[in-house]
Length: 223
Image 1: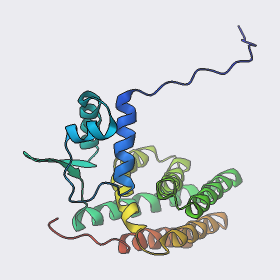
Image 2: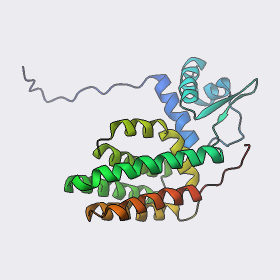
Image 3: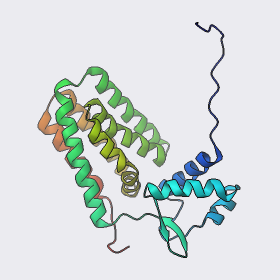
Image 4: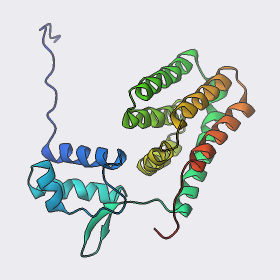
């Protein structure tokens, strides 16, 4: 039976654990937690004005996701990406995203092109607001949508598994002056090549884009 009541559905209220999880994760991605800073559940609970139980649950999820690592008898710290890990992440992304372009380009629609352009516009807005968190979110959405549109769902799952580590890399890369502007321009180049059905150029632009991101990051071996 159709409900004609002019009322809005009730939005689900987030649990304390979910709020704590989002707060810590945002702090990590925003660089508010320094690389060498040691954290404890007690310290986090006091900072967030909550009990240790939701903090312990949130920390457990962040440990599983690889964003936090445990330092025996000392506490927790933000995961640092080693040179080898950086190379592996970029290699996986290059392989997966070039395949996504190969599958998508012959059948890409005007609506999909428009969707990708809209994401880039949102990136421009976040750049003007100097909102690095939102910029990275839109960046990852751009890349994931290409895989989604190509219907390569197993590859999309693999990409999702390295999504948060890619975000750690992305935030480091944006530390380079002018990198936001470069990313926007590189995304537009990829879109133009897709729109023009130029396979070689689209794949080359994607490869160059990911390599430039990699080159913008300096990681120290053994850290």
